Amino acid sequence: MLDRQVVKEFLEEEFEDAGIDIPKGISKKSLVETFCEYVEDDYYEWLKDNYKSFFIHHDWEWIRGRIKHHSK
Picture 1 (tube, helix red, strand yellow):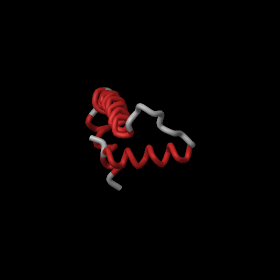
Picture 2 (cartoon, helix red, strand yellow):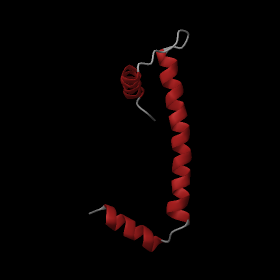
Picture 3 (spheres, helix red, strand yellow):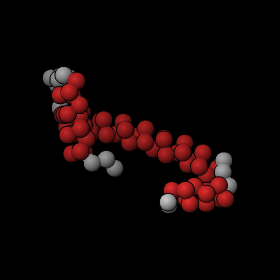
């Protein structure tokens, strides 16, 4: 789901800004992949929670109002 190249560049920049060096024995590729999977897992849970609050606790009129609000 996430663009691994974009995440790699993001992490490189953040690590550089923070003065963080990747320890020996941890490949950049493995670090990027693991971080992406971590974010994607969290993202899926976030989507599920927002699905519940958007669809289950509101009626279609409320949803129509949100659509109208965001299409301005």
